[in-house]
Image (cartoon, rainbow, N blue to C red; front, top):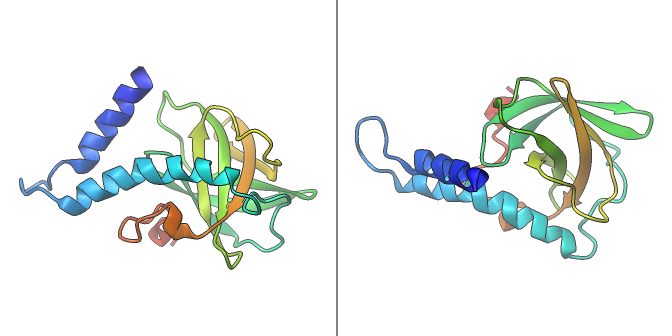
Length: 164
């Protein structure tokens, strides 16, 4: 119940008007997209051929990692043996307990970013590596899909500005 209230509060803040008192439909749409996209992403693991079985060979040196219904962070991409390691720059909000990350690739194999969820990873999804945030390390799984299934292009889940 507390988590529901927290997410509802985040949604209301995201949907609130601009500081000058004008309401913003774009803000409301982005607030809804911040919740709906990551939820839809988890459902995509049930579609055959989209779950990554192994880490991609090529990734950029930096990626955007977004906390579900929360802020986006810059992350450094590394490897430990054959597994990936995403090192998130910054601290999560105090009460957030990450459970797993999802690396998102588009259909061409380009890394879009990673989402950080609370809870347990999707059952049966192979672990590609880990996500390290402060003193916590959680499993990383992955998926390759059409980003339009989970993202409103007006409200990117993984804004490039975070890593520039």
